[in-house]
Length: 232
Image (cartoon, rainbow, N blue to C red; front, side):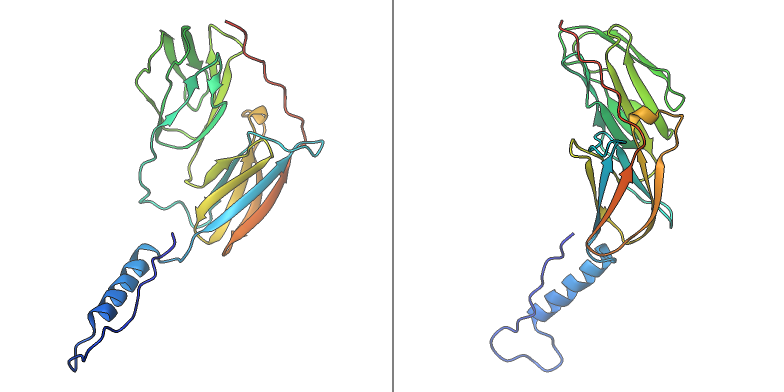
């Protein structure tokens, strides 16, 4: 948040003794409001760069930060996330959400799908349905959720549920940016779908200061190639 700049300019004419000019009172009030709503000053940013065993950029890595002081208790609810069946695949392939978030699964194909998760973090099933959107599902436990279509075995997707509001996924360049971070100490974690539930996320202890903090994660594997969507 960039605080608005209050003006502290005196208006023309004389002022009565003991009475502050209106402009000065307005600036003082603005300063109080800024102190209430932005007590820690401007938020900081984390940039994480990831690479695979060969040094190539690694996409689809979840970067999430767990505050040493604990997650604030008064966080607002997250908006619903969307994982569509589109072009005979799950879009997006990887979705990261905060625990308690609801996810909708619209079918945007002219083809029936049968979505199922066998994952311990959230087993569920959306039986065969045509175009439309069934009721959203609430993900109330942290961990990895693998998505499958029982009618189209090449369709795979992932939802990763975390207990922190500070997360982002890496893009094709292997970079993720987490914004609006309060300054302080964190444990930064990095997870890729190829790690499944068998390999623990990579971790780093970091301190977030003013401005932008940069970190790197190197993984000891090369990602598996995804199955391309079959023609309908």
